[in-house]
Image (cartoon, rainbow, N blue to C red):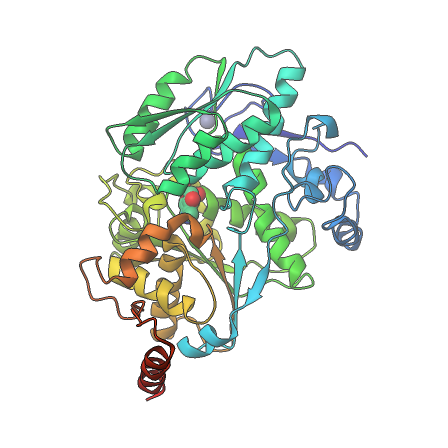
Length: 452
Ligand SMILES: *Cc1c(COP(=O)(O)O)cnc(C)c1O
Ligand SMILES: [Zn+2]
């Protein structure tokens, strides 16, 4: 069976474009593009046969199907040849049962999808493997592409630099100066990218990269490029597979540029369309209150008593937030996110700086190690459980988007109680005398204090 996919306009303008074409917007209306698949062809294989195929490939060595993304190759980039796939064995991330934390906040069936446990420490790997593979295939077909470029709040540039280096394609990354973590900055430096710091925010970097990539020889790797969404949608498929093909009730995800919430929705819709599942989960897009254009739009629509539409959205200048990867005031994928939220009866929630930091720290105390963005999602979850919107028995998945180790400054400052609000779960290291008798006596006092 031959499977095919192409770019098309999300607003339905006529025209299909090859996935190896250098095109980011609809030539008719300038709107966003999306990747569409030949579902007729995909239906030629029965749902049970797809599930069996995906289960057989999971985590094995046969190139490139062992990758969590490429185990779903036919649903992602069906016409890529295996030798053009650029993979670092991304995906297959663990889905952990957050039993203790769940009980603390009033949930019996809470799970964390650990997308940050991945090659460069964030879910951005999942989209980047697809984009860089499509570019490698385009170059093999003779397209004159000289370099890959992106603007980034840190994780996109780390992923692009790694996959570009693996493919041997030059990478340019544009970063807002002083607004990303040290770990995020050192990643593209180590991978040999051309790393540029700009005195602006993410939205400012985005304007520069859009101008730069008007030159078709420099390929735009931001999530406006819908190839990335195709890779990221496999998170939805993978979590359902991990539940033995059962769909959870709720999925919460932090949202900045809003590509990921759209991607998750697409994954769930595709499984339903092809008969693997029977329902959609309700998605919750979780924003930092300091960078909340979608939340504001949602609140506006709700106050007016009608469904969310694109017309409710007003771009904003995002304020600094500890959740630095989602400090975005003019999200590129907003139209897709609006559609996703409406179609699945989703919700948009927000979290303050103190709420996101305390939620991350509270969950860390049950054994996790959360990045601030995951903290945003956890804080929104706590609010929705308290409000009775999400009930105790519901199966809930929080998508953790990055590894906490990329954000050690955030954690260190939290535990020093140096963030400008009281850190409820701060845990300060204790200075002990070196003499064993004194040290042991002090430890007993400390332990008694902890145990009350
Ligand atoms: C990119 C990113 C997000 C936001 O994803 P969008 O697709 O831009 O909404 C959230 N968390 C982390 C850690 C990220 O790197
Ligand atoms: Zn169009």
